[in-house]
Length: 160
Ligand SMILES: [Mg+2]
Image (cartoon, rainbow, N blue to C red; front, top):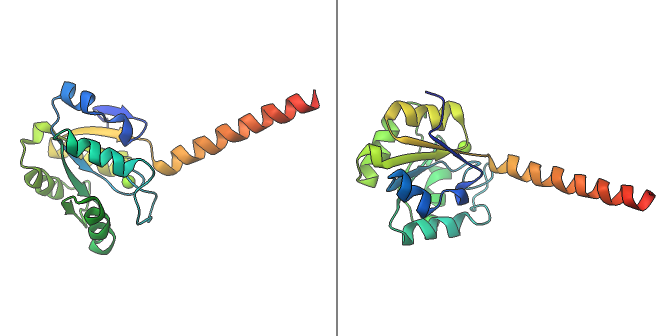
């Protein structure tokens, strides 16, 4: 129940080609650490372009978040997407609501999120497919660590 059906590094890894092959026509998407940094009112770099690419490819999208309406509504409106706020993930009720908003059978819908115990567990309970992505903060940390490693290589060469 905790195991995602698919794993990707970020939402950008969720491509039209991948969705077509997986038989997925609608995505229920988490906000915090999936489309934006925690509590950041603006989408992470590339997230808006990803939403546009999905829309252009005919994929239906719905935002879902355990956060309150004051966080979720402006963010969803910025992207022009329907939303479910105060979702109480992993409880299945909000997933059913999101599936209804997408207007597709639940088997053709997938939850995209960064957390096992809310996003993935809830999606599996609700009977939609599940796609786990790395948390955006974690992606940033990995980039910083990579840069530090590069820096160390550079410093070492200088010393040699
Ligand atoms: Mg999240």
